[in-house]
Amino acid sequence: MASKALLDKVVAAKRDITEAENDLEKVLRDIQVAPRADKTTISKVVEDAFTKLRAVKANLIELEALVTTDDP
Image (cartoon, rainbow, N blue to C red):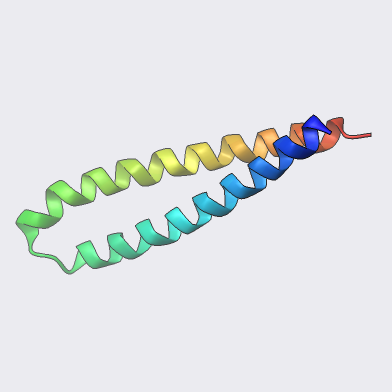
């Protein structure tokens, strides 16, 4: 039963990550049309956040696979 609760949390986290990815993609598109001075600083921060978000998503996918293979 603990693995069911863990799997539910993983699924919810993946959903939240997908929403955050979509938001970041929109921000990146908006930044592309921003003035150069604003774009440089903001885009680096957003790109770093996006990279971290993708890494976390990959870890969650691995965790989900572990949880689902342990279920009887």
